[in-house]
Image (cartoon, rainbow, N blue to C red; front, side, top):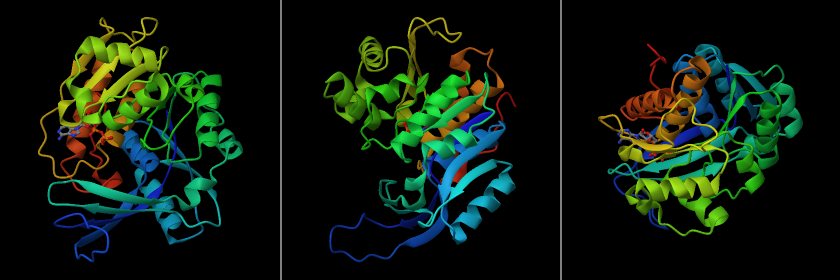
Length: 314
Ligand code: ADP
């Protein structure tokens, strides 16, 4: 089983020729669909074949009803706490070159509590995988990781978005970390005192990347996702996870990318599903599957609903 603790948002997306400068009024093609890093990762894990429980906070509104209906359709076990705040929203502008700018209205997501999370994670057990991100209150995220650890489950922290500063104690609770380049650079600046430009991360040699990962999270396996350049994997010596090498790069799968929104969510969700479904496989196989899954997710517009139906081992 995979349990995802995180955000649900209704995404409002405008496709515009250029991103709006201050004071501008623009017209663009509009679409609305479900998103939020938590929900995206839950759908990815589910469509990759895992049994999924999704723990979140919703409002008492039409968007919340939509979340319930979507989870029913997908076969996701939804454990939502209902609050007075509106269900989370995101306003997203995407330009002709695929660049975006995003404003999040956390709304109900900000009301997720450690107590609710503990209750909702009841029954989690060894072999299960807990997935969390940083679009929920940090006390709830920390408690989710702690509950999962106590139950013997594997913990995967996707430290996104990059602008949320976390304590080292939260990093210590993760067996797996899946930052993208921007998130990795932010974590290095905060926790290792290394200032490395995000667009420089993919150019670093393997030895340097490995040393940085080890300094950042000595006990965790770190998978730095590098967009179209694939990803870099770094294991602590104590947890090789079936791999022969402590660190290696995995190239991206070729893709006809039309919208890379949620590629990182696809990757983390699929990785969690692979770990839960095929624990005996070498970790590198899981990473290759996650890369294949994420590549396919970029070939369709949208976030949660762009997740491909591509099953682990299928
Ligand atoms: P995020 O969406 O969090 O910024 P990345 O851009 O690093 O994360 O993408 C996550 C993963 O998705 C990458 O490691 C890669 O496997 C896959 N991916 C992203 N963009 C592409 C692309 N253009 N072609 C193929 N795979 C991609």
